[in-house]
Length: 542
Image (tube, rainbow, N blue to C red; front, side, top):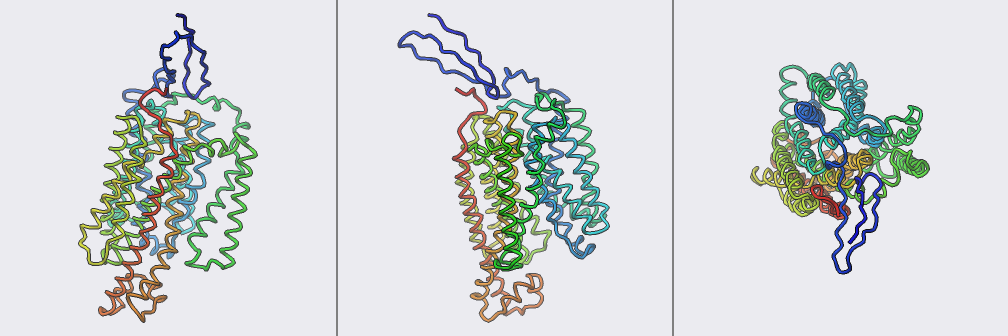
């Protein structure tokens, strides 16, 4: 029997195979294709102290990002007193708008250099917030930090992808997510302590020494092991491939979309000329962006072939559902704890901790399980089952429940979402070739970021609608518009005891009915989960 030798190359290169001559009746052996990151891909992964420094830098950067995301909430009262008015919209808008651009830049440049620039830019934004003399200067600093955060998030995942083979990445993605969750959990306590002992400016100044440590560790401990051939392109060609016009079109389109959902039906009616104008501008800009991507193809900031990939689309939708569910739950449970139950803002922040702890623990279990068994899909499906149950239970809480009930449900929800929360990143890491991974991660990050912003904004309209109807039922004859505008803190001090309970019951019912929205959203995550193909990160692909 004679056989022809077959040369197998990594899946991110062209695979060539020849027919083998086999004896009739003998089973044909399956062709094995090694995943990217296996020993035969000729990539030398870092070890020892350099690997330790690289991972410490990623963990610290993720902690800073998580801390920065939620520490603003602790500083809002002080910011309002100092600047008289403040809206932290710049960070979220710029993060979402520059996610695609960050992914594109990583495909054209050194991961190490782009990541270092992102960290330094984040430090500049934090410094601006620390010394801000006016509210506009502060908002601009937050916008700079948001722009840099888009590069930090994508860069952290790429550094892990370049430090470990595919089958070892899931647990490190989980460690990365846990580091960010630690920042999210500790932000209310750290922020409160800094404000009490020093000043609200220290909430942003704390990023500066930590950022310097990250820059030092990544500069010394990480070297790009897998060189991208696009790095050698002339800078003029890189600029052409950046699709600057497409990148800049995203910014106003995202801004318009967020303003539509934030203002529509709340500040202005849906028929208001301002809202209509925003809808028209947003639609036109989205069409222009799509046309640019189709026209430029591979030179576009978001190449069409990436968008057409079902795995990328599924990962983006799954991330939008999980992030949107967490954001809405945190937002309306804060209203429940502070408004309906009468706890302080600091205690309300502590009451959210069970959800974040459940998220951390489940993320580590999901990452370890994916590394053990190779497949991330079962853990994503577990989220699709556990998430709706936990979120549905939360919608049953009311004014008279013991505190342990909502706290347990929050922990259950965090666990249910956390077990599959890292599935999109793990799946794309195993499926996409390394050269496409930055763009795939960018689309997923955009989905997650927009999921948080859009669904929180959209749920506000539902809450206001339900609030009016529930107050009319629970407190007949009450001046609903006046009560809605006054806020719960004013109601407790101004409304008589005989009517206070009726009004609080109405508020509680409005919160419960608004929580149906995250329940439906996390249930729809099944759409994203089934779109992602089953491919092992542990074994060879047959």
